[in-house]
Image 1 (tube, rainbow, N blue to C red):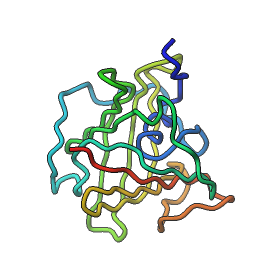
Image 2 (image 1 turned 90 degrees about the vertical axis):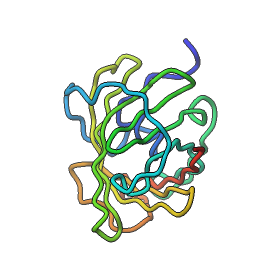
Image 3 (image 1 turned 180 degrees about the horizontal axis):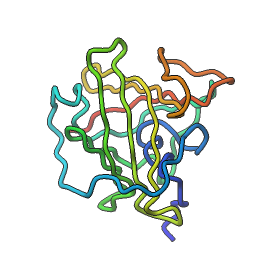
Length: 170
C-alpha cells in the first residue's frame, strides 16, 4: 500500500475538514454520496466563501493539538458549490456534499461524505458544525451529527469536537 491507512469516511472528511481520528461521527450506512466531478477553486457566495482548494494547517481534537503529518498532510479538500472532494495527489479519497447556512451566526455547515478507498470504501457518514472564512483562512469546528451543533470555535476534553484551520491554495 502507499502508507495511507484506510480511514472511515468521517475521518476522510474531518482529516480534510478537521480530523485524523474517527471519534464523534455518526455513520449513515452506505448511502451513495454525490458522484465525482471536476471541481474548480473560485470563490462563491452560494457556499459561503468556501469554494477553493484547501490544505490543512492545524487540528485540535477534544482540547488536544494533533499534528498533521505524513500522507494526511498532503490531502487537499476541494469545494465547489455544495460539492466536496478530498484528494491525495490525483486520487479521490472522499467525496460528498455540504450544506451551509450563511444567515446563522456563526455560519453553519452540514457534511455528508463517502469514503472512496480502503475497507470502508462506499461508506457514507455525516457531521455538523460551524465555520468562518477570513481571506484565505478557513476555520471549522465540527461535531457528531447526532449531538448538538457547536456554537463556538473551541474544543474540550468532554467533547468529541474537532477544531481545524485550513489555508486556501487556489
